[in-house]
Amino acid sequence: MKDEENENTGDPKEIIEEAESVTDRSNILTLMDSFVDQIFQIRRTLVGVSISALILAPIAIGLSIYLIRHPSFLAVIDNENEFGIVLSILLGTVIIISCIWLFAGTRQYIRIGSWNKQYKKYAAEKELMDQRIASHYGL
Image 1: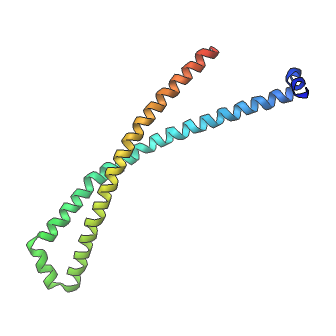
Image 2 (image 1 turned 90 degrees about the horizontal axis):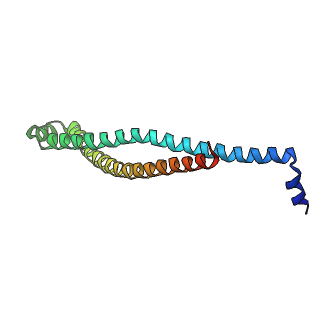
């Protein structure tokens, strides 16, 4: 019975609390929208990193394989004991890291593509909801 009385009285304190609650929800939605927009902007950087991995990793692998297969490479290994061993280890490391980078770049590029489709769907649905709310309340 007391709850019904509070709703009917129009107490300014309750009206202010209800308005603050609506404002808090609005701020959270605005914050989430800005977060999603920031992620979308970061996506561009991630696409650049993925493309660089798809371009630079094969170049590094090819160059390393070329150096290893070059006829003078064996002469360097034979003539320069420590340097030849270090060079072999470094080229092997470059090949392994480049293969990992190529795999990671390809995987990231595919994931970003699917995320882009989901973002476009989200943006279209958000715009539609905004239009429905605006037309419902005459905004």
